[in-house]
Each structure stands twice: as structure tokens, then as C-alpha cells.
Image 1 (cartoon, rainbow, N blue to C red):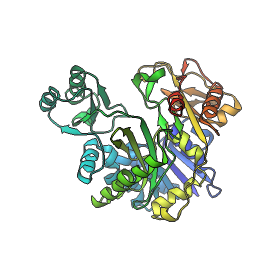
Image 2: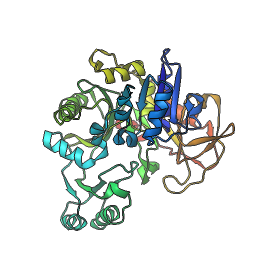
Image 3: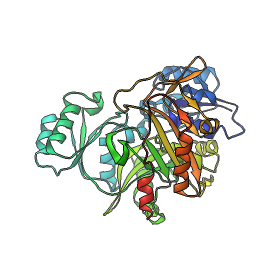
Image 4: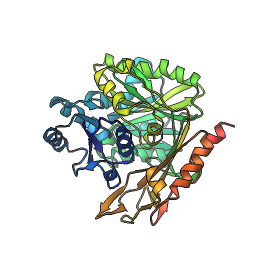
Length: 421
């Protein structure tokens, strides 16, 4: 089989490494891929949002199956376009990807169908939003409606911060068109959990839960990033809570999307908060999370391609989806200064065992040399029988990833370890 994977980050590298395990797979093309992915797939310099280019490439290369991994091409309708020329895909069509593409849509969906989430208001008028903030409970959460590279969410601790965030989004177009509509949301408290789930639009098979670490600095300080590391499973997500989430959130969400004529097939990501009043949805993503994928897929015992095709074909109920009863930890090595300004172009070296355990995100090839080209450069994952051992081993392996001005948090998984005590 000839496969096509759209995207070029650590998530896509993890997906490709997992797909390669299937003996039927002959060739994997990555569009655009990156310098590290080039060791595991044929990278082609076509942007993930160049739908015409993707469709032409897929047709000309007789692709058997495509995986559309990032949010942008999903929301733009990449799966629709590929399906129109007869190429089966993993991922939702555009009318279902809106569950991530518009936070206002997602909040209204949850309200309409009784899915637990934070109280909220939606605004398209700046003055009305500012007026609402005069009396809104503080702290509050300000969200740009559209896609914003994971950075369109501001937790405002004061009224002034909230007004500044709304003004930046709506008047100053900080996130472009994504911020022309804003959601102002109740601030929830409790442990956060990420749950990725396979679905064919009828059956839901959750993957192992995980815990992301969004802040740039140790002890969850500094700016929000795309994620500085993850662990799985999340110790706060007990089997009892998993049952509650299936009954009150996962299945009702799939049913709600079906009722709206927006059947969701692919990977649906549930960002949850375990509040004193029960689990609530913070956000939906219409695809695999990054870097959650880098701890979840290494624990998958079933064949990924088989599971993906079952989601496409509507046969997930009859398809086995099992995960190892182990623990995983992924440590991100980033460029110093990320998520703000940082230098690029530094040569990356790996010890052999580090290279085998590492997914590459922000790197490109210059000749035969791999050099940094992004903020989050690599994710190094280890699996062990205990969380403590997985964390220690991932840091040991990550020490084998070397480039100038490398930076990583030193406390990935510490919060999870404390939860178990």
C-alpha cells in the first residue's frame, strides 16, 4: 500500500512510525514532512494547506489511503477533496471538523445537547464584550473562535487583562479572522486530562489518557506553548471517571454531531477538566493532539492502519483497539526562547538510542545535516512499567539529543507522580 500523511510535525512523525509497523505498507509520503521524518517517509514539499497540490499529488501517485493530521487542512476540507477523487481518508470532513474550527459552534453544540462544559457567552461586537466584562466573574477565559495555532486562549486573572485580551483579538486582529468572534467562558478548576478517541461516527474507542504540560517553564510557569511534554496514562483519569465521560460526554458528542448532520469519523480529541462538579469539556480537537500522540501511539498494541481504516469504513465496533498496560513519558526539546523569538539553523546530533526514541518536529535537512528550524524541535518518548521509570528513561534518552541553545523543562510528569501519592 501507498500511504499519504499530511502534516510535518512530531505528531505526524509518531503516526508515520506507527503506520510503518504494518507489513502491507510499502511507501509513505509525507506532505510536507520535515528533516527528521525524511528518515521514515518520502517528504514532498507541498504545504498541508495546499489542497490543490495535495489532491494532484495523491491522484498522480495512486495513493491507497491518506491520513490528514493537522487541524487547518481538515477544517479547509482536505478529506472532502481527497474523498471526491476516490481516496479513502482518516479524518473528519469539513462539516465535522468545525467542532475545532469554531469554538462558538462547539459551545453551542454542547449547550443544545446537554454536554457538560463551562458557562459561556459569545460576542461579535467589541463594545458588548467589554461591557459584559464589567461584571463577569474573574478570573475568566477568553477564547478566539477560530484556529490560532493553539495560542488563542487567554486566562485573564483581572478585569484589565480580560479587556486587553478581548481588544487584542477583536480590534487588533492578534489572531487574524480567528478572533473576530470571541467566547468568554467560566474559569473551571481541577486536573486537566486529554483523551483522544477513535470513532467511525457510531462507535467510540478511547485511547489511553494523557497529561500535557503547556507552560514553557518548570512548575507550570511562563507562556503557553504547543506542549512541552506529556505522560500517559493520566493518574487522575480513573476507570470510574472514564465510564462517566463515555456516558455523559463521548457518546453524546458523537450523537449530537450525527443529529446535526455532521457525522464525525477519525480522531476526536477531548480536552477535559475534572471539576468538583464532575468532568467537563474544555475543548474539542478534530485530530490527534500534539504532543499527546507521541505518548499515546507508542502504547498502542493494535495495528494503527487497521484501526484507522475501520474508522473510515464504519467497522470500528468489530475492530480490536488495545493499549499496553504500561506508562509513557515524552520530553520536548525546544529552541531557547520558544514560544517567542528563537534562533534556528543549529546542527542536531543524536545518540543511536535517542534517535530511535525521538520524534522530530522542528528540523530540516541542509545537505545530509539535520538542523533546527522551529520552536519545538524533538520529542523523546520512553515506555516503562512505572511512570517514575518512564520519566527517568525519557530524560536519559533526551540527553542524547544535542544542539546549541536547546531547552527542555525538567519537571515533566512531576505533577502526575504527586497525584499518585
